[in-house]
Image (tube, rainbow, N blue to C red):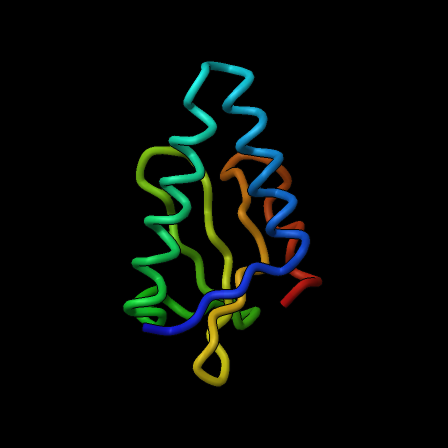
Length: 97
């Protein structure tokens, strides 16, 4: 398994989304956090499974929530550069890669 590190900005996005979903319904934020955790586990097992994009990143679409995990795989390390909602501000993370 490949180690996964979230950039500070991605970690902020994660906790903002958790808080948003928790406001919508009690426990939904925890469900979102669990979905992200499962997704990161899948990524760590096969980081090159998802297509390499022209900007050097890869994207993993979560199953239950409309979020992309945008990451790079370099030197036996996964760097999560964004946890991005699919319909908000597309491509805003490109300066992080």
